[in-house]
Image (cartoon, rainbow, N blue to C red; front, side):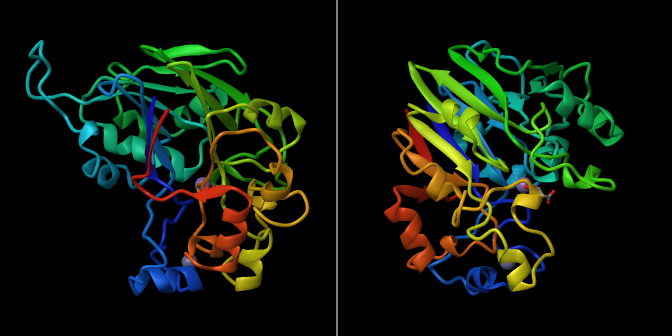
Length: 304
Ligand code: MLT
Ligand code: MN
Ligand code: ZN
């Protein structure tokens, strides 16, 4: 199973277009300690020919440009001038950084969109997504906790994680930490290997941890280092948990809760531009690495 990180950042990317936080400043200055990063998406394949995208970010077009395996090619069977190795796109929630890239995939190309009923209803409730014609691009609802082969040799099982409705659908008092099909993690199995992808998780309780144990690769929510880092830096008014993202540090943070988890490789993904662990050589990066975690960067690849 080959896994390519198309975009390792959270919404906004690194640097974010309107941000001068310490991390973004280094990025704008092209300081080698902070790599530029695009928004949250992965590509996975077992045979190297047919690919599954995990989330479709607003940066998708630029992400595809730098990964030759995702470029159109001539098939042995012929088939004309139009082609894409992207056979399927799986959406883990309805957040802008996970669905807006679907609009890039609108040029009459057949593929399939997978997600829970809840997430497909979010897309279905917004007519702009009809630019991706449902005549050519079926939307296939996946039940939670039921494995399904969505590419030859690649099985996916979705599981609910504590989360909330997408930010752009928030109204009134928002329930955070509810578990439904609105926010899911994905277990991908192929070649006898297993990877787990959880780009957003408000809390890792035992039920979540049970899904992660024994994985060959874990790509987990690394949005913020400190729960209140956006409030403290003046870049936002919400804690990470309020946004549906448990922080890396502190009580109940990822470094603590996932410390003893038997997982071959732990990688933080969906990292917000305010997160100081993005700075190579920072104390926060040191803490993350000391705990056995890696910080994802764009174009990182894993062969499982
Ligand atoms: C999130 O991960 O919390 C969302 O992507 C926020 C957003 O919609 O910008
Ligand atoms: Mn996000
Ligand atoms: Zn910033």
